[in-house]
Image (tube, rainbow, N blue to C red; front, side):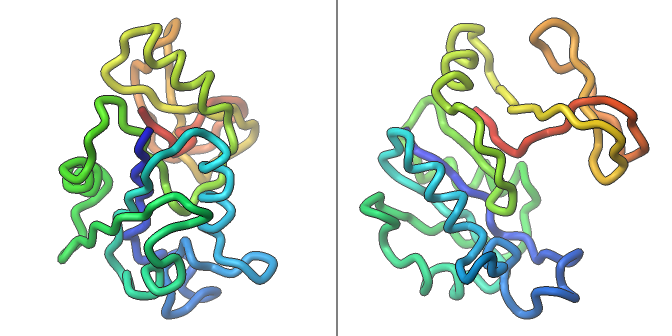
Length: 170
């Protein structure tokens, strides 16, 4: 399995707390946040990690180098911000896998990747999104689904009970 980690954003909402570094490099207990994401990820059979970078990419490159705990890392750097879809499309050019795992580099959502992958394959989905149930939230858009299919994404507004996009995709 190959994984693309989206880590190119500027982290404007965190700029008051974490200045001059990419959001995935925000320190947590003395380590960059993204190191926890990668550590969890490589507990699964990942053969290659592709980091899709933008803002201050050199900070991430210099920290992680050419591999993380033995898993090769390839870097794809956007000259200008492409947005989530553009970043995925650009990074996918550097992969060989038919079923590509894509994750947000600033989100820790430790699901069972094997179960998620099996769901994706068994349902013959073109695209799968890991969802998380929350209560009493307004910071996230919600996801409406019917059966096993997403039917709409709603903008951020108060929701007493609902599902949000967990930032992990096949």
